Length: 408
Image 1 (cartoon, rainbow, N blue to C red):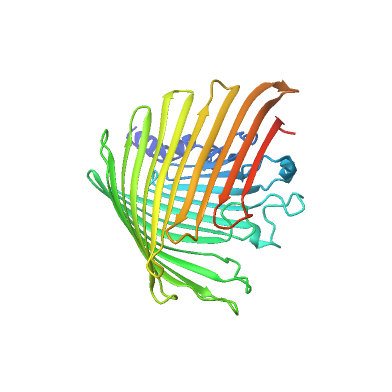
Image 2: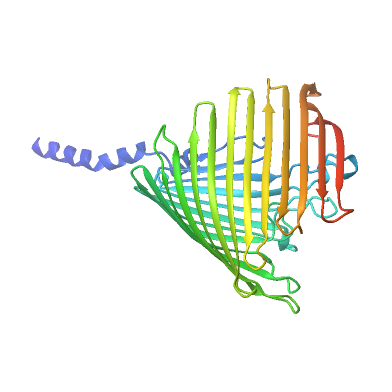
């Protein structure tokens, strides 16, 4: 009898691992739980490709990106069909590790149309000047954040073309103070065209901001940059200069408004022109006011003065602009923008004025064959006056009635 109980106990103990293993989901079932599918292919702008991978340690998602620059002219002769307008399409991927302590993001995009307006593939390799590559890495360790940014776009890419930017930054939280430092480089002529110069700019920035809830935000930033031409074609004058700037800013956010006042001092030294110096002082005031939920008012005021040491001339540039956005409901939208810019020099060689204005009234109609339909009335006005050089003044007044049926 005793031997029977011993054999039964050994059988029970040996069968326990197999019983526990039978309760663990199959490996393919685990994979299905980690892969999530969504259907957002019909969304405009940045839409998600229906594929993402998630786990307790790693989460990765993929998105389809697109960009279409806004229409810059309301003149009928300058308009082209939407199918021929410049557009970009690409694929972006984002991944996070350890509950967001480390985040990586990358994107590859290409012009969706070529010069003839014929759609092209994203992986079009015969023309790298129409491609953009972007990468960003961000890490967090307590109160310390750090990251690396990289972006390179060819000269034919529609959004911020012909520029490479690489930057490394760090940010420390010190109670109510936040210290941020960055170092990086930018250059043009990404494809190294032998007929064009390549201008490279290296910069260093360090700034501190005092941030406290319900308090105004005060920030102070110092930056130093050097600019030099690293490639000069035959007959091109090399460029060498460096600048130092200091900016102090005060920002406040209320319940229905926010405002920011900044003042900057910029010292520039041109090494090619025998160390010629220029001193610029700029003040800028920006704000956003929402008296009601359907109305947004955004004014901007700035004043810049620049003094050239080699000529003694002083250049003054005041700028004022105001934009209004009124959205009564999902069907009615009204927007308007106006601006004034003046540039004058004390030696009388520069004296120009520019006035711009633009307005739009848009109304969403009932769907046509199931497609959202919008009708808009748009108008624009531009007036540029040059009081030094005769015959270069320009004035333009244009209007446009646009009917947009989505998905056509």
